[in-house]
Image 1 (cartoon, rainbow, N blue to C red):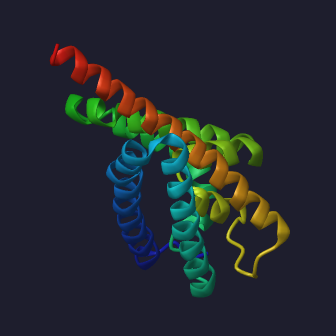
Image 2 (cartoon, rainbow, N blue to C red; image 1 turned 180 degrees about the horizontal axis):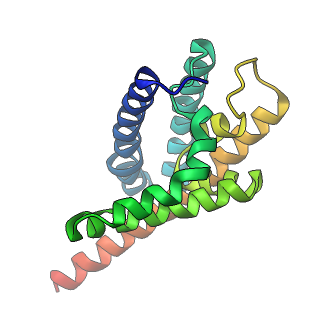
Length: 184
């Protein structure tokens, strides 16, 4: 695989676009739907929406046949990822503080990916989404879907959305509690 500037610009562009879309989906949209409909009905709505969103992304990724997520570069990330974090932390205090939490999450996911596919599945399902989890666990394969792929996708969909339902319900409840304290 040739990891030239074109490859890295495609991967960086895809990650920027997906990060923005995922943030909108996971934060204001998911929180609003859970707040309006509650964790059960809202969770079901968002799980279905997540299934559709991720299925469309998987179909586009499969049909395109191009590694725009950087899955083929994962071996390089496994080998050099911890060193990249150390170099980042050797920068100014502002960069160290701003990058502390994201770098810790990255190191946990990196550790899980290095260990085995089960830990990678759990870490990616929680930290990312079913689309990225499936694409990573397919290890760059673009030859159609197998039963294993469907199992990974559904399992990741349930684990990921279970996490987001719990997380966003807690955020809403903490917000309500804070609101009551301030207004009483």
